[in-house]
Length: 589
Picture 1 (cartoon, one colour):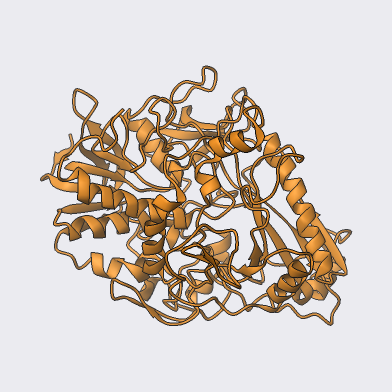
Picture 2: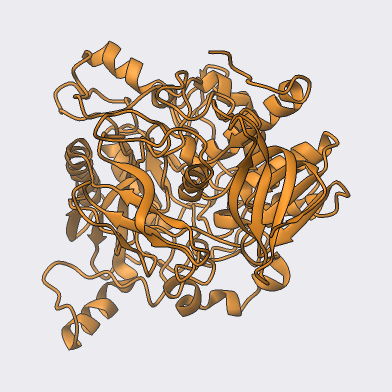
């Protein structure tokens, strides 16, 4: 029997990036807020301090900051006709856990999506015709525009202190920035990071080919910065331990450095860690949430009543929570009906290794998670797709993030997989190899989706989330074409050997690719094809808001974090200025 607690104004499911942001905005508005986090409490001091935080075996290989798959995991299959099996070891993607969530161990790339990303369906049909995408492609418009999102992007970037160079301020192009970006109100809060040598080689080579290189926008800061919350971040030390690690130097923007110290002192906020939320509770009408039920570390069950429920967990877990709670109709690929689990998409990554002779010293260990130089000439619809037979695109860049000894040992084609020959090649090429990465979009298709597994359960007896996914043919074609462009740039950099590796199917979950899982609880303008309205409010249960990369109708070329942050501020603004004054649907249908 669950113990019923006193009602609060709002309950947050997850105290990562979204939870910290919404917690701050709602308590600032005077609401009593409880934050429920399944993982451990974590702070920069003492949890992220060296030398223990530089334990590559513990954090990179054994995934110490990640979701515990012995308790809760995902089952996977490529097609609806296969039997899914549970992931017992994290590989392709790495959901975080603990206070701060995945924003603790992210790399820090902070890009804005483009107008053509937010209007993908209508834009493509207008430019290339209604039959260009094909019948199995489920791409759709978001219901928001780049102009709608701009003030929320701006606020989020100034919260983080993002280091970068604007390319378009109020319609005026800026030399040295991204010439393809939509207008922004002002420049980044801090200047770009220092450019590593490999990135400088990339910049010169890309420019020689007629492309438009610019510094990657980074939440690893180029200089000290005090954000609007009064919290100060330090300068990045280029230690090479960003992704999969917490930052010991207070130099990477994370909830611990940009919000939590303020939020945790707020008398209106209560944090409860080691709490596993089982479901969102609904009243008899199934149109109103009454709160949530959770289990604590001792196995005790509690009911937390709340007037407002904010679901801000990892994208996959957001979808699972809706399915477990009976909010929204589950998607059925056979009929095409239903919305929860629909439009699951990933990220299509590839690249080219550039092997130099011994005169070129790359120094890969002097890196940061988001340093580097990139081009956006092939992002979204910045180039003509008509003759190419695919939609979408990607940015290409020399953005190497580390040279750590266990994970970084590039060798050219023909090297033995082990033994003396392999060791010799590792020693020869470690300091003389650069990587040109391709970070590309992922289009939504009919048979890529999420639902509840009929067989496997988690430690609390609830069905696992089942992922059905394979790379669409559209994305395979795109990856091959973009990887050829990366290879051309690698050759122009002066590489002695350039090895391109386009993404190929079938998709598997054992090889790390990216943690940019998207979709499944998507936003849109039509309740028949989306779970959420433009404010991240569920169509079916208006006092439940779901915020994260789960909201994306398809994935864009760029990393999702900047857009997740903007959506969080957009939702918070709507809740405080509209919903609290008149609770109910914010968009009428």
